[in-house]
Length: 173
Image (cartoon, rainbow, N blue to C red; front, side, top):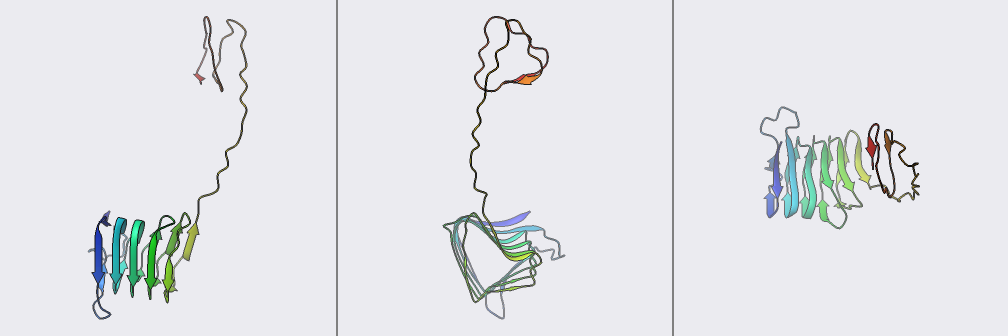
């Protein structure tokens, strides 16, 4: 995949008559590029068109401002990967993507006067990781008689072997 990774600063400012276009050069309709990835950088996009990417714009860490921009025919128009990130959008159009915007791990995005048009799966997908609660288990150690062979088995807990041990198979500890 081709991608644009920003760890510094990206500023792309077009006009309504001449937008800055980010698209795979082949333009065959196939998604052949990853998109723009902001990873500890900043981006300011105005009057842009981002098309044909796996994710038009992905914010991993950094700050993004988007105005008068179109995300179209991407798998994901915009992906924001975690909470606490700064992304502000005005008059942005998400059109004919599989998913217009994907907000993961409690991420939020302000999108004033933005429109979502004909996205195939969902306009905005929120996905948070499931809350994990550790399951408590008690493992009991079963003692073998002296010289009793171990068969194929898993031994959980503390295992202390004394004297001679015979194994007939596979023992996992």
